[in-house]
Image 1 (cartoon, rainbow, N blue to C red):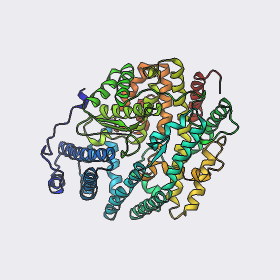
Image 2 (cartoon, rainbow, N blue to C red):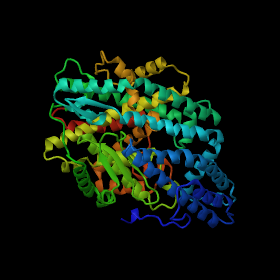
Image 3 (cartoon, one colour):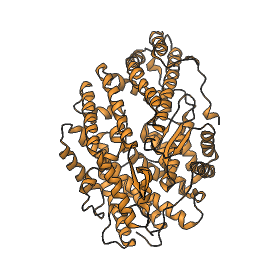
Image 4 (tube, helix red, strand yellow):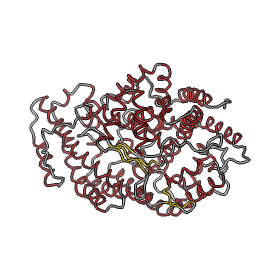
Length: 573
């Protein structure tokens, strides 16, 4: 696996200690260096990239360890040290380096396509940089982590045993309706226990983010964040087109599924605790029993698609770059964290033995393959694609791997159930993504809203994008607080619509895969190897698909999804 060869340092000492007095001289040297030629500039960019890779990987390991053991004070302190003592001091130097690049007389000679996103990013960062925002970014990073700390402490007792909320969610698939309802109510009750704390934390984050945007000369954080996220390839208006397309083309199909669910389950009322149980009321799928089994089956699945994919996970296992099992004190969620210097990323998740864990592992495995394929690119900036591209890699892997899921299941019935569950999840994910994104647009363009106004807008969104088939009677409080479970709102604002855009791309890529697997995998790998050396549209084109979320295109993709869902049923939707 040459793609995971650690990059040899030529600028930063291998003995570097992560203390500011050891780091600062490297930035000073980059600031002072004379750039007399194009080659001098390219070497300067390589050295700057090397320093960035070293520091980003150090930060990554501190973040990973802290999330694995949220109650380990040493890990907490190590992470906080970087946030409080290193990051704030990096910002002024990053600005100086950006300005040096921008003003360099040789920068206009960087005409190769791979440099264009880097140069646009440089201009954007210069335009947004404000010294007054440095302490605000530090505060935001610290406060955003409080969500994970609150969530990690949430647990419920079911039948005399304590479960994290992730573990307890498996009971929502129980064929015993009373147990589903009891588990659902316990989970929601536990969430509501912290509703005031979560509201107050969100208020604080909104205020800080609004201050950041105003310091940078923006009327609101939404407009600031679109610029900061460097969304060069689409606009606020395009997001509104996405919202409308999902409402028109996806929500009706999702409601058709809910009507089918209600009929199959023979229910007078379809309640929130009925939306995850198997449609044939069979016991939840049990695709694996341990993290080791999940790893081995994932490797086998990936080997069948492309041996290189299996090798990536095999190498991560060998180097202990996988922490998969859910346990108390571990932060919620899952992620693949790229490690730009060593090349082999790290996968973190909370597996409990469910089918969702399989798709999470395949999803993060797609990210990992992307990290490995992009690692040979020369600069960190080239290896860091935007989320619209990164999530295409992961969500496509979820779908194209489905034909290999027999490694997790012994019979065709279970395999069909797993595929159906995955496709129904696609239909529920897209409206939820649109809901969360539209919610954020309103939140940050109306930063002085009250809690009641926030709740009212959220409930209106639930009316628009939620299912009118599901009966929420008596659960009004739970429904209006559902947004509080979404980590992205707290930790990574506006990073969510990318999932929806990439989901559409993944469906299109999967459709291609059905027609020509060999060609599609070749295009998929080619697109991931591009990193961020092309525009989003060009990368999607390299993958053989469109970057398109018009109502007509979304409707076309939904027709394909509906056909595939029908194949998993004895009768049509």
